[in-house]
Image (cartoon, rainbow, N blue to C red):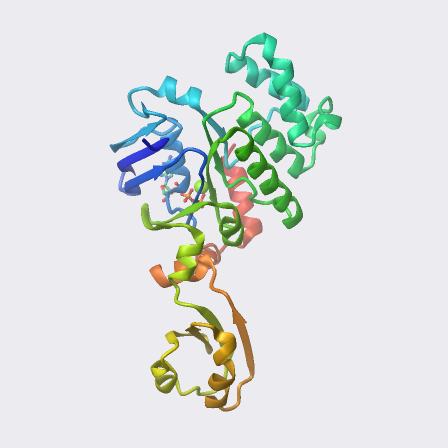
Length: 325
Ligand SMILES: Nc1ncnc2c1ncn2[C@@H]1O[C@H](COP(=O)(O)OP(=O)(O)OP(=O)(O)O)[C@@H](O)[C@H]1O
Ligand SMILES: [Mg+2]
């Protein structure tokens, strides 16, 4: 039996269908990523699995316990790091963990040892007795990770664990997540907008759009399904009809004057392609990404969505922070 199972899991808020009939089977020890644009239903799905949000219909179990009928048992099995920060900043790092240990009823004889171990794991031993108010964004996130794992949950939910962090801190945070997951064979379910990171970190990925899982596979298989490498070029009038007929070409797409040709072993065929196209202004060869998979399935760009809502990353982050208050 999978450690997380959902069947037709659904949540509606009035007229809004936030999550529409999701079926998931996530195995013990997996790092599973939910990837999708703003408003796709990622936080709502996690909310239902942690018993914070009540499903409208459908069902789900965590380690065999029903999320609707056995919320207390489910809560003991899960750890959560929310999208919005929830540390108590008038406490020190260690005090935050002590509070959590008491809330979860950890046996007093184990508390100190487990807290010390967690602080060590996220490299905060030296700063443990400073107020968390004085921590950097990355340190706060690490402390939240330590807190989410302190009671040794079977499943750790991470909602946008690296949102708003600089790339270096993001990379380090992912390192900790992986280390922690492997150490205790913890199952990790995370959401993220950062596709490159999802690609590197996750054993499997579910791409979610308007409340539905539209693709579910390993990142490698998803990328293989794109049919090869992408050659992106700019030229005034490439003979696309001829290019489409080449046996190694699996697709041609045009966006804003950029021609993207998908082909097997692009390095072997690039010269021939270029010989067919007059006045090439620029050419780039790359491997497909999960964003290409998303575009292929929906015709939209995950990153574009935030921009179309009139938001850049700064505004998006600000909105997330605001929503937590
Ligand atoms: N408490 C609520 N009341 C009403 N609508 C809600 C509520 N929570 C979520 N929604 C709506 O449900 C949909 C899914 O929201 P959700 O927060 O799950 O998306 P998300 O994928 O986590 O998005 P983001 O990437 O912006 O975090 C959105 O349309 C949202 O406005
Ligand atoms: Mg969310």
